[in-house]
Amino acid sequence: MATDTPRHTLAPPARATGTVVGPWRAMALRLEVQWAWYRRYWRANLYSSGLQPLLFLSAMGLGLGSQVKDGSFLGGHGYLQYIAPTLLVSGIVATAVNEAGHPVLSGFKWKQDYLAVVATPITPQQLYGAQLLWIGLRLSISAVIYGLAAALFGAWTGPGVLLGLPLAVFTGAACAAPVMAFAAVTRGEGHAFVALNRFVVLPMTLFAGTLFPVDRLPGLLLPLVWISPIWHGNELVRGVTLGGLSPLPALGHALFLLAMLATGVLLGRRSFYRRLVN
Image 1 (cartoon, rainbow, N blue to C red):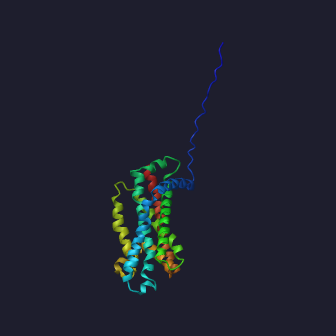
Image 2: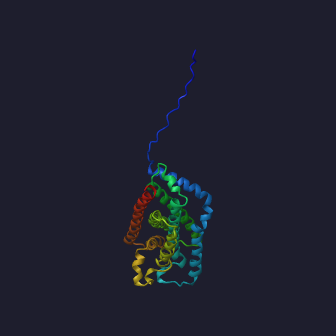
Image 3: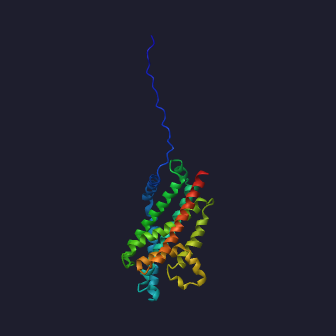
C-alpha cells in the first residue's frame, strides 16, 4: 500500500521591484558609508582640514602681520583680523578641490566602489548628489574647527563669523561641483589635479584678495580676479565678518557662486551617468 510522503514546496523567489530609492534616502545611505569610513580615519584628515590653515594663520597673521603697518585697507582692524576670513575661504576651497579630485576619480578607476553603488537601486545622479553633500559636510567640519581655533587667536571681531562659516562652505561647494564633473571624465592617473592645484588654486589664493587688496594688482589682472571664485568668497566672508558689505555687491558675489555651483551640478550629474552607465 502506497504511503503518502510529505511534499515540500519552495516559495517562489521574490521578484525585484526595480524601484529606485528616493533621492534623500539614497544620499543618506551613501553618507552612512562615508561617515563609517571617516570615523576611523578622521585623525589623518585633521592636519589638512584644520591644523594646516591655522599654522598658516599664525605665520601670516601673527608673524608677517607684526610687520604690517596700519593702513587704509585694514579698515581699523589688525592684519590678523583682515586675513583670518580669507584664509578660511582659501583653506576650504583647497580642501574642496582635493576631496573632489583624486577621491572621486578613485571611485571610478581604482577602488571602483561607484560601480558597486550603482548596481543597487541608487542612481548615478543620486550618487553624485550624495558625494557632493558629503564634501559639504567635510567642509563644514573643517570650517568649524578653523573658526573655533581662530577665535583663540582673537581673529574674529564680532558675531559675523557665524554667517561667514557657511558662506565659506558655500564657496567650497561651488568649486567642488565642477571639479567632480571633471573627475568623472578623467581617464588618466589624475595628474591634471596636481596641475589644477598648482596653476589655478594656488594663484587664486595669492592674487584674489586673500593677503592684500586686489586694487594693488596691475589692471590687466583684474578680469582674472573677477572670475575667481575665491575672490567672490573672500569678499562675502570678509564683508560679513568685518562689516562694510553692501547688499548689491553681496548679491553679485552670491549669484556668481550659485551659478558656478548649479553649472557644476548639471555637468556632474551628466558625467556621472555617462561614466557609470554607458
